[in-house]
Length: 376
Image (cartoon, rainbow, N blue to C red):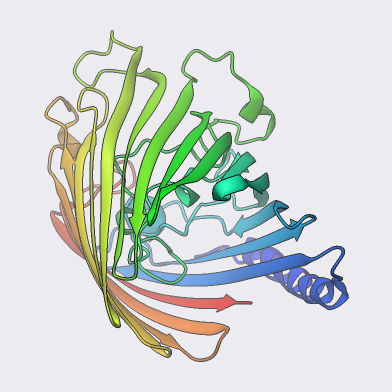
């Protein structure tokens, strides 16, 4: 049974934050403008496999932006999540819930954490510098149809490209600039280890650089946009130590790859294509492809997505030999500017399942999900 005590604690803290942020809005002045955005998610998931326990997860995001100059700001992102069930859907099925476990401690207990805290400045020719505690996925691998687990797909492989070796929330630097009309670029450099990548999951380890397995994550991306197209592509390098999949004596290999997103807007319809390659010597998921479709109006949205993760030929783990294929269909109903409800079905072939939690891994299964989102 789900432990409701952490949920109750987070719920009452969320209510306090809601009241506080509305108060902040009311007293904001032109000399100290503070913009706030917040979102609360409840997601219930039930799978066709009786070995896996149905689960309800809770998460909250609060973003505060303080603009002290016309071109300079400080941004703060507070995040909270419930404790994932040990044998629940989000824990057992690795590609089931991108919203779960986003803020947990070293014991995998849900907590409230500062996920982002950065300074951003815009300079001549719309050059933008951002430095601090960052989310790399906010700057790289963006998609119009498959990018937001609060409003679009909840499957992780339809939120970000799974073959990119992204760090979690991490100390880093991003530089964005316009190259020409409709053409821009992004450079991103950070540590390879963010909050969730460190075993202790504390902030002190974000600044620890002496560990041999740590290094730099760097990426360069080009974006093209106009009224009908949103296209990006990039290269990345994760030079922290990786073990070769077929030789455990090789411990100092790097991971690297390329990726691309192509999006086409046709009125209320949006089509999306995403692909990526990673170093097959160290990355079990070495190739990836996905297709996504979204139809949206003011009151409704519908999405259909397909993703395929191709396993490296160097992989020696028999439980991860098969390529995973996944289809997600969702339909979102917007009741007002704050509340939406999204029923979802996820269909899996060769799902990635934690073998320590499930005795017999099925070749196929499905999840039924219901997401309630409140944003303000």
